[in-house]
Image (cartoon, rainbow, N blue to C red):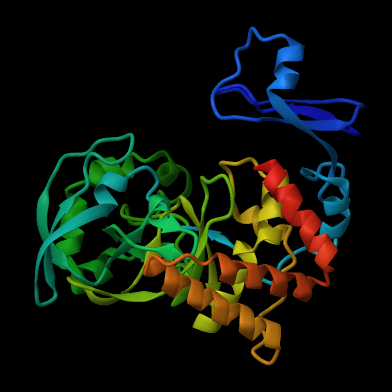
Length: 365
């Protein structure tokens, strides 16, 4: 495979035809649709075309293919590689969001009154109101709650998983520490045991077991990004003061990817690296737009945070400022430009190479 033609100009239509020819990106000059009945001459008149190049992101012939301007592809090779970090999927209920996801009505001591979000998700569950302990309840962060530089939980969730054993807490432990929560889960025993993932992976575990929950889930500082998105959309999350739960860690759901970090400074450094235009270009040039999974960190060479390296400190500081300003509704374009320049310096990119990457990113959007 040496090239191709990428037509993305018709509404609800994306066709990629790769063959031995230059790779051409066609983009509409104006908003609106182009009729499928248009002649090729009419389509040419209504579009702008960019000559691109396609090549594997890695050395293997099975690697994903990047498509971009030739100069940008040459420059980006300085950045490609395995990150010094690992990404994980957020907490997964195995298709039982309507049981684990809850709203809180009131709080008294260590007891809260809850209602399950029974109509969320494809499968519906009976609606119940229960009093349970606060211990296993955490702020829930969903994909729609995350924008670049900001993440705001919109509900709560139960996480009854032992992060050390990667299984649901044992029945004796629940009876001793969270008997009311155990009784709540027993209301849905049949439904929880019938989950396909439970039958396949955890049939010998307690039936309130979940998936993709480990010590990384409970890291104090995490960087998160949307799994379903057109480009990288990252933010830093940590503990927060909740009006019902006091101070609690924010737990992302399975539509978010997370990177656990050892400190706030490190988390902001990683966030700045992932949110800059260079990383966004890499993702945009090869990833399927709605599948920004953990593989991202296999292709962006992010060095381990070192507080003694000035660019690392500066990237962390700028990410913190971006979070503060976005939370206040202030534009951060100037700060993002500084982040782009620092990231380019970190990876040894010249000003011209950064310019080529930015131009190619704009063409791919």
